[in-house]
Length: 314
Image 1 (cartoon, one colour):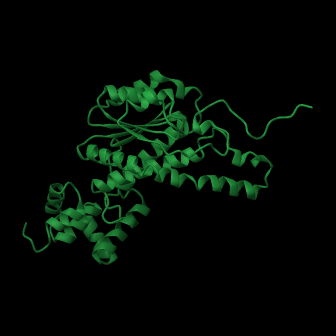
Image 2 (cartoon, helix red, strand yellow):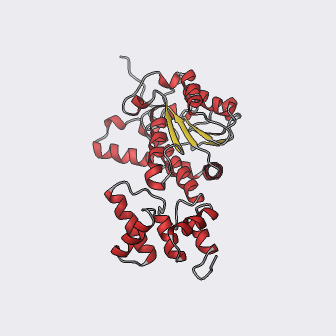
């Protein structure tokens, strides 16, 4: 009788994310509660893999912050899960940090349709990757981060090569060691080695989780560096919903000690801008003067309050 092999399987692909995971070899025979526990045990290894890349991530954060401060843009480029996560992170920046939608952009292989359904073959279209970068007008002021869990996606590789040719800053986020020639062309590499997936090759799992953590850290860190946060509060948020209007008011109330009605008045005088309202209150000046001083401090509220205390006629 012929039998199928279940353990010590060799799948013939040396990429870490494509290898067989012996810890989950019997997952299809487990009760549901044990499946959940086993998947969770695999997920718990992701944070350590990301932590091991702290220096590399910090280097990208610093470069992105410098470029954004000078008017440049951040682009994420990926296919499948990687591309969707880039688009998601980019889409969250305007409401959270008050950025222009053009400042952080996500490019996914297959375009908008690929956000809601898989488009087979899109990741292999190298010409489309190059064309996507050329359409955006990427230049020396910008930074392009390629996201490829396997490190070998042709769409991403071509996009990064186009970005290099355009003089942009570049980085590659992958969960396995990328090809040496590509690694040597980009300025930064972030490589959280999350290991073989619970379901072999399904990089929407650990690799996807690691990608989400890294992208969150890059944009959040860069936005902190350019003054979008005071303490740990999002003082540049855009109040585009009832929830965000309420959050704006609560932030103003908490930092100024004002009651709700007074906070509403102050926020209205600041044209709805939380940071401006806080600067007005903290320095006891009108909106125009508060905005002038903020501009002189590159929009960093803490630096502005230190530089222009209320008793200083400035």
